[in-house]
Length: 231
Image (cartoon, rainbow, N blue to C red; front, side, top):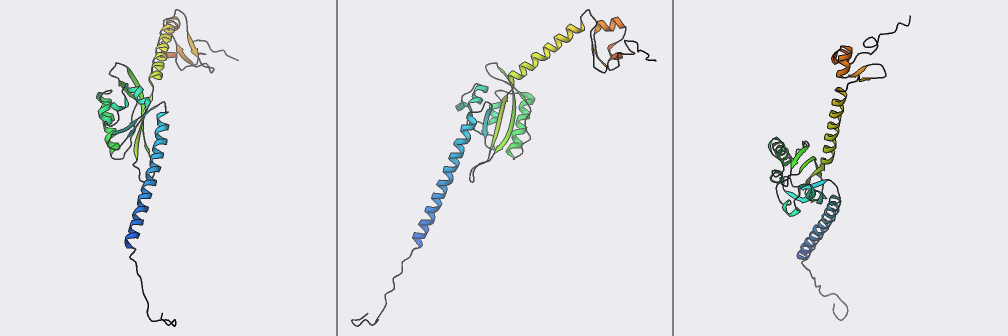
């Protein structure tokens, strides 16, 4: 404007904000990645805390079978420290404890797992280097992760050693009882409420003159005991 206030020209100022916009976009992406990393870290710490408190042995695996985590229960089961477990391939680790058909079965299952197929595993009888024998029930499942995190396989090992030992003791007790009853110098029968014969020991067979297969499943009335004519 001149001294009278009349417009005599104009000045146009333009600023290139392209670089500023690019920097802002990069900063936003960086903040978003940091936020996602913090969520994954919190999720991972929570999951590991839960797993470490479990009584069952728990191994976290990548799809290629590499062990990424082992809880204290795995150390107790295997007798190995975590440093000797984490980072190893599961198939390599199991060679220490398994052999023969069981090892081949596990290897096939791991090969399928690497392709995303989970066919499960049968109960395993493991032999530790210190001579201890373990009976475990393995179970494989998938554990999801927050967006951006990798899915991992979870191998759970339930220790059935004490249960297996108790079962064997019970079976032995049953065998001892059966031998005692079979060899007793007394007639021993087991009869259901409907009078069906379910057990017939050797002394009874000699006494009545019937083989066990001749009377088992039959009604005691009319077989060993004369049927009473109600008429």
